[in-house]
Image 1 (cartoon, helix red, strand yellow):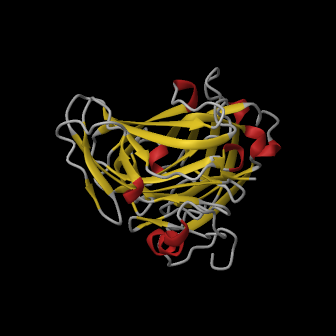
Image 2 (cartoon, rainbow, N blue to C red; image 1 turned 180 degrees about the vertical axis):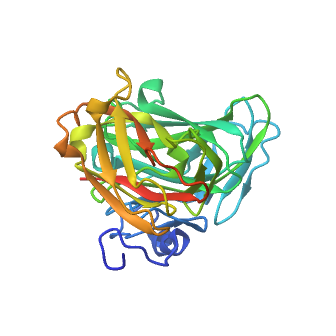
Image 3 (cartoon, rainbow, N blue to C red; image 1 turned 120 degrees about the horizontal axis):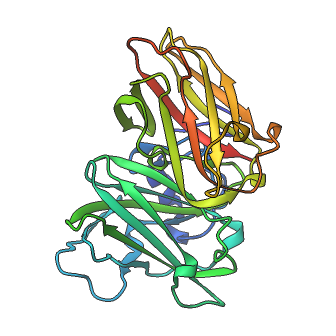
Length: 329
């Protein structure tokens, strides 16, 4: 994919961040791809005017709770969260316009199978206090490795105006202490796409040996309809994006037909809100690009996705791999 709009490079976000160290938070030129904490990003993780918040720029909102034990390096902000939120804010945030920067992408490492609620709040020039009306909340399930998360704030009614401050509150959901390591946080536009990273795809159905590494999902079919379902933290307007694409590797012998479904929270997944695809099952990656506008039901607010990776014939053995999923305008 070298040379394409979504092409990859070998430059890390850390290397790129050094270029911004003299002008922190200042918007930069195109980044054709990023690496967070040594993790290869999706080809969709592209920003034309990004703001990078590095780990050293966070500080506690008030006093640090007992047992938090923060450790800050150039790569990560590490601490321990409990059922009480760890409140972190940016020391010196340059203001930016919300509508021009709808995507927030961050890298976070959590213990395998741990459950953490990631809260994020912001205040604006006209609304200077943090409030639930200006927030989002996302449940994260740890993998023991760095994982990327991208939240699309374009449809949030409280994400508007000039943002003056940001606060994040990681909190454990099961009462036990959960260590976390937060990498860079990037806020930017979606002109080059809206990635749906593996962290957004919840517990899969009819699969075995599910794993994630290098921003790629690997699994073995455990039934005739292996599925991935993404419950997005915030809905987005369908009209904002025209295409959905991803790369898929199917083992030989699999039925190379699948389907994408979407819902808006008020309705369940249905055939009327779906698009099918056909690819090649030869053990190699193939890019699949779906023209969403071909279905007249691609409209309104979308808050969940379902991918049927194989429909019908499932091979007796073999691994399915899925990566680089995202919407484009």
